[in-house]
Amino acid sequence: MEQTSFDPKTRIASLDKDTLFLPGYPARQQVVWLASELVRFACYNRYWLNGEDPESEQAYVGCLREQAGVLPLLTDDDYYGEYFRSFVQGKIDAYDSPTGEAHTQSREAAGTPVPELRLSDELREFIDEVADARQLSPPSAVRIRTGNSSILADVYLGAETARETWELDQETRVFRVLGYLKEDEHLRNIQRATAGNLLGFYVFRTETIWLATEYWKTEIEDLNPEERETLVHEIIHALQDHHFDLAATYTELGDLDASRLDLDARLAFDAVVEGDATAHTARFVGQVRSIPTGGGRYSLATAGEGADVPASIWRESNFPYNAGADWARFVLANHGVETLNRYFVEPPPATAFILHPELASTDWKPERVSSVDFLPFRRSLIPLGLRPSTYGTLGEFYLLNYLLRDVPFSPDWLHDPQNQAAVEAAAGWSGGFYYLYEDFPYEEEKIENWVLVARIRFVSEEDAREFADVHRAITTRGADVVEDGGVTLATQGNGNVTALLDPIGREVIFAIGANAEVARAVIEPLVKG
Image (cartoon, rainbow, N blue to C red; front, side, top):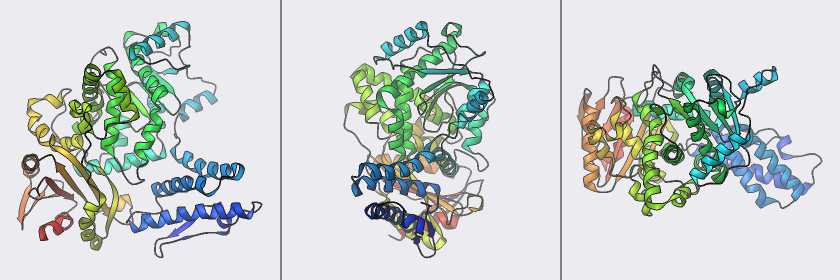
């Protein structure tokens, strides 16, 4: 059952004989398999028609998921039906499984075991006490492995899955456009530079806590106060996973669409997870911050002095711990632990929910901004050879972080008086979407033409005007500004061009492009209208 080929010129997926015919299987089962394969081929064609690469890894896995979803509808045969489903699911699991813990496995294969805390009576009692404080029953078993900073860094970095690799690459590209990162900066390099500062993390795929210790320790009595506090934080993550299945929720957030990168919803859920753990853990020794993570690893790290981390990335990684903890304390104080628990099952829809904890007592949801709202932009870019590569929600936090840009990071950045104009400008957010369009076919090292267009909806026209004014002031400061028929084109020092329009009712629409031509072209339909 080889993967079929897809010819972009003809838009036809080819079925070879090994895919069509399964020697030794009854004819009825061969028909079932062919029908499921046709679902996958239709999926490939849809990617192409949407202007996306049908041969990309995300398309491959997305179409496999559609095939897996239709198989139960095609056959109720326990034996062959389960075989087909297992076959397809195995391909999906291979893509989603961690590449990591290879460092640990290679050490143990060489006869050098990585130690873990012995599950002694004292450790069981410690876990029970943490579980009682969190008001959850303890799991039957928790694996806690220890090691120095080098071991933890290797394991952490190695726990990245293929899906997370794609997300990290896409996130990097979006962050470069928004100004969070410079053109030569990549989130993966930042991870590598800061991974040595990890105090501990929890990998929910393997249900394992990793704890950094000065020496390899195997007894809880040997842990110093800082190590014990870190252990409390990670045990709470293990409790969350045991009771609410963090992996399932993260997978659901990531499976909306193979090309959708919904950073805002994921960060909101991270804030629930880390805010809960932080609020239920005694104050740590010194200031603690997170490092940028992929889904599947919940970590705690020292401040990482000396690490060259952009301020925007510090704010993003700090958000789940500080804003998340404030949100969790508010929910606990005003609604109780059962309400807090509910958000592990029904995650908040956006970071606005975390930034405004009073929304916890309401049925608030973001206003829907859909791909249909971007059709005029897409038509204007087709002649330039640009196709959508990724899209998602540009929520309140990411809008705020975009406005702050290079403003120096401080632990209390969200409440810093110097940042309040940006905070208030973003606070009227009601819904928002972005699309990133790039040269097609995609070859990252050859991409020269690209544009991101954002469509943001605010609660009122006054809120839209407030954001537009602050955004214009920040974007045009120090830029080469040209007024062109109702469009303001602001060329930054790096050559990127931001196209600004006046608000349209409650909406603010802007574009950031590689040059003035593409930035202007993407919003031309609105100017003509």
